[in-house]
Image (tube, rainbow, N blue to C red; front, side, top):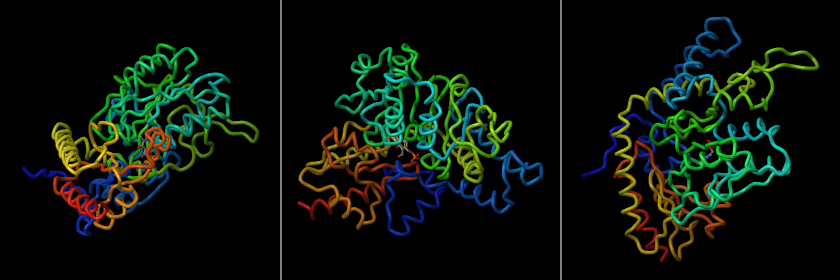
Length: 401
Ligand SMILES: Cc1ncc(COP(=O)(O)O)c(C=O)c1O
């Protein structure tokens, strides 16, 4: 049975790339966009742009309504307790930086922050830099051989000095769901704040943030088939109350004088300056589109693609997978073949996959690898895309060995 995607035609970008001879298998870096998102983006500009939260005129009121409607949709999408728990940022990286600055006042020298060995730089560097600024200890939770955060070791490393735990929900290199509920329970037992990096996890399936119970959850619009330049920070009401503003200006202020000011609470207090209005509105259209899909069919399609990817990678000799990927992607190296040479030959054949350290340099060092090739896909990919990749891989390996 050929593996067709019923949603492929909804994504003009994937069709345009295919017409150009490009097979796009890099959705973990950024996803192609549905027509509904493009229509919304153009529709906002074509019907008259206006700033939000500050004008009483009709275009301003219209833009504010559409902007705030996305907040409601995002809250529904993630099952947040209230739309006031949704803060718009520029992406996961900015959300995590906001947290590292906005929570800084809670830390004292000697406190510990626990992250894991597989974190993307976005969920490592803000905490590392906070630790350096405040004299904190950054504790790195090790992984087991499958690529999961090792719970037994985590239980010995998370303790009374742990003030915050920040871990990925789904690894962008190893493609495995991490045991976040168990980790949250360990951290909560010591009263630590919990941050989940959902940049990859949010893209696959629906997540119930009330059930998850983390203090903060972050994700990016562009990986979720939406526009770039916009992301979300979800915070539980009580957690947001502990966060201090980190950027100042615009409508985040309640009262301003020359020498002092008071600031709004969340969410507007964390949205300084003109936000990415068109992107927020178009993210709302993307969420409408995603909500209209059959979740079960989407999950089954992704699972079937992943099975086919792993089966195809099992055939050529010398391929070593990083960990045991469960969904969405697979990263690999090939014995005796330089990753950069292989990446070059795949690129020459129109295969768009990612090679290198995948913004997780410490993980690569820990695995003793200079880098890896990563194949990742979205809803729009089909069996033919994978066949193109396998054929190109065979040809490249024939040339290189
Ligand atoms: C796990 C993970 N966290 C964070 C990020 C950063 O996301 P963004 O670049 O959209 O801020 C990424 C992006 O690849 C990611 O994969």
